[in-house]
Amino acid sequence: MRGWVVAGILVLALWVAGCAGPEVPLFTGEPYLIVWAGDADRQNSDFLAVLDADPTSASYGKVLRTYPVRSRGNEPNALTAAPRADRRVFATALLTSRTFVFDLRQPLAGRLIHADEPDSRRRLCAPQEPVSLPNGRVVVACSDPARYRGEAREVVTAAGGILELTPDGYPGREVSAADATARGLLFAPTGAAVMATGGRLVTTSNAHGYAATTQGERMPGISVQIWRLEDLALVKTLGLEAGPRGEENLGPLAARVMRRKPFVYVNTEGGGLYASDSVQTDVATVRLVFDFGPGVLGGGAALTPDDRFYVVALTGRNRVASLDLVDPWNPKPVSSVRFDRDPADSSRSRRGGPNTLVMSADGTRVAVSDYTVDVPAYFQDGDHRVYMLRLDPTTGRLRIDGAFVDELTGEVGIDFNRTRWPHGETGPARPKGLLFVTPEPPPAPGK
Image 1 (cartoon, rainbow, N blue to C red):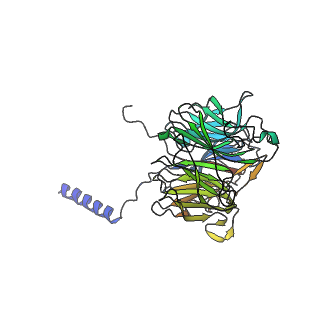
Image 2 (image 1 turned 180 degrees about the horizontal axis):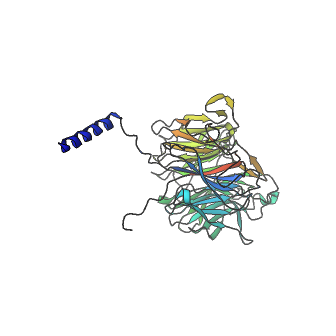
Image 3 (image 1 turned 30 degrees about the vertical axis):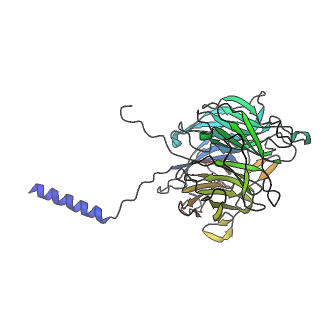
């Protein structure tokens, strides 16, 4: 009799569970968003912040942890463009020329493990985008030579270059970007991308004038440089040709490489989008394939994993836009979202200023920060918020994720103009570099 009772209870339990509806699938994407931020008034330490990026979490959007770097006024800039197998994150700082290395195997129990502190022998400064090489080392694009001042004679004679760091963040080689065969061009490496299958590194020459010692104006470049991965030797410098407007080529910024074929896109602050399918050859060329128009001030960019869509920040227009790449030589506009309006109330204006963005591994989420740079020769601010966008992988349409809200104000977008952080009451900060991360999986049983 007791067996029948137990069986009946089990049947009833299964029936109740079935009536509860389908189980909500677990979130399998990167659950954390890392933000590299600078103290706004430069009176307190700069820091790395860890935000909850799991949309199924009750604390979605919350600042969960911060890692101060125990130094201030660095002008935090860029993070490694993609997660590394060792879960180390390299973070560059323009004004102090430091590169910080964080161990984020467990993002909520991470640590700062090293800071590359340049000495008087360092020949390059103003570190920009860091990229990981197949051998585990990191190359950092450096736009200016050490002690660059911006005097007229320096503009076309001074050259930045690339700095190689070990996986622990210690300096290796410094390679000048100077090219005697490309006279009249600026050599100021800024953006960087690796084409592993072609054995190439691609860097952009955005501008001279990011160094703390700059006293002249920021001078935009118009070139892209190609390097050999095996020995970091400079292969070729390509000048970008202007289009009908005459300024599409000014300030090349982000270089992005397709995953499925040797194809590279480079956007510019001047509004141009350039492409090449030959950087891995000895006869590399690049051409203008799309014009976003005047005054766009192009920013960060990303390609979806299937190479179908290109997403880019248009800082000057307060928008993030997507292009369809079904024909890679003829991109077509798909969608854009505005950042100068409150997503929950379009009648309320915001400062906007989207500049840096990063895409999740599955290509369905794009994080965006509203801040550009503050260096002696150039200043471009924003409203100091971080947003989450959703990207439809079939259509390429973008929308702001209204559930990604600030835990203090309840407003859409995480506001970095706050008083308190997990590390203390240090006041407002300016968010810049971004990276989606996931914890290191636990070791297999018995290991």
